[in-house]
Length: 163
Ligand code: OFO
Image (tube, rainbow, N blue to C red; front, side, top):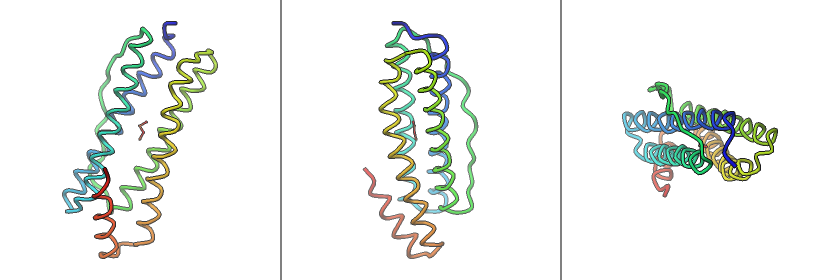
């Protein structure tokens, strides 16, 4: 069954949000590079890549269902944060916003009895649980560290090992 224009449009918007996520995390990587936290920067670069793959997965899905993608302008992300904690708090807030956005697609798919989209979204719903969890864990640890230099260096080394 060909995707409805409503679901096509809402996923098209989601593609833009995923690319914005990718851009936001790349901007955070640039910020961390600028303050010499290479481990945090590495973590953000990988996150940026993951978001790009989320966008492409939605892109491919629209074509699998006979729809059409129309790419839009990507909003300019913020470039400076006050501290690693502030950047990760923002990443966590952003992930909650993305979860909410995915739930809205799910609600629209359910309303239309678009079971294929419902099924397809399971991947993202699971992914969001992981992403919110990892961002919130980092936020909690950074709060605990409370700008202590040794703590920050250790955290930087740990996040630099992300694969
Ligand atoms: Fe960070 O999440 Fe995409 O979907």
